[in-house]
Length: 331
Image (tube, rainbow, N blue to C red):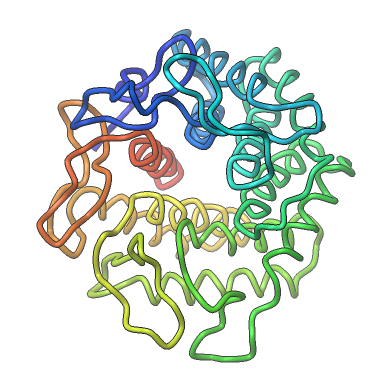
């Protein structure tokens, strides 16, 4: 199973990455968003030997993020096809994901000029903090990338520490050992930040906490040896859990966190989570249906009780690419 970047290229133009598609066709009327451009920069920067086309795409996404950022370090999120911003700069999820994209680009992008510009924008972004735990989590992922490349980065270390504090401490409740009373989206990213912080700081207690969180999260999102992830509506402690609409972003977050855990611990058993994530896209899911289109390389936007939502937007396609990037570590 391969996906490549063909659908990501199809969803992009010389401004950025379109958010939505009807089936595989871009819906220009919905415009672009910083959230997805940042996600796109993450997966492009993970490529150690990108083609010329992918490097130009990374340049485009980097330019978009630079344009989205204001002098305070905050980010706008929504840009219309008319090239006008529809919101004001803030420090919500778009800021967090932009920091993730910038941190990954600064640490890992193959082009030195992209690394340099990304580091400049990341440094400006660290002047901000968000009151939202998810936004701080995403920013923490970017900080961890910086620290892996530059262990003495004080600005990244401070941001990662603040991200862990924003996530909070899990309650002493074996039935719900999660730092929040609900699961929403990209849940495994919270565990990944704690795991990264514990590893990079040498704090074994923190590392162990993160690994326990990921173990619990993986277990509650596994049914019959396959991933059955929390749907878009979320799941609150003590409430019944819906089965659908499952989202690719949740599967990709599990793959990311399990891959990091395997690297940090040296324990290959964590690769099982990556394999289950890949298998979910291939059809080992609650509907027994393939969640990507081999003709386009795009991923479907959600898993419903009637099968896949056949639209192939940016978020789901990037989730597929991110998951498949980890397959190289399994061979």
